[in-house]
Length: 356
Image (tube, rainbow, N blue to C red):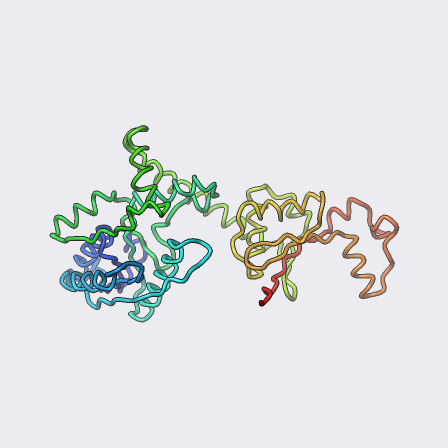
């Protein structure tokens, strides 16, 4: 906790997110210790807490109320209970609950003037995240797992095992609530936790969780480097216009694949789309090979991407300005095939969804 707050620049007011489970309750107990001291390394600190009631289980309001009472007994003040409605989304109930929870936490942090939000994720959670990413065929960003710090979100316990948070609760004489959904086989994360990880530890030996978490830490560095490089590359190439943006076809084609896919994803996001899956990115990237269709390829978030060749651009210019027409091959009379390959565009446009 001390290291996490130091790395975050010693925020003067922090918010603990607590569900009442062993991880977040142990986190609250440690945060309460610093709240009672009133400082971290001599820097003043005050601690508030919020309990989010997702209303997904019978008795959830009672659990939230009891947890808030325990937090107040630890000396944390103020403590709030925030009730959320978990909307149905196409990404599953776990993702929907997470989105609702994070929105409530951000709102509470704003209302209570907190500069940081403390989350109780542990090394075990990190290992499960990486394993799920591997099973889904995810890329570097997903396999990099959860960050120790991301915006206002801090995860001081990413280096602790789940057994250690249970030990903290025992030492502090706290009785944590054990969420039954954590053992529900209906959820992929629960199956990973209860069924998959124990088998891996048994068959491969101890240390699997630590190895997976170490993999995440290594990939975070790689992902950050590639992200920065892709962002610089994208900003150097993108040309924005009304209703969309375009990239020079030849420049994108010449990029290394790791950058090429990331630049295409950034263009889609820039015009209002969502992060495309690998299959959709492959379809968009295939437009650069000049084989088959020139598009459009539909990307998540109502984004269309298509290729405009030099002949297309010449025809547009002819219609708008009355410039010399293209020859019978479809290319401008003043441009050869090589110039056509160099001068095309990869165009990204956001399409308004149709209303039914």
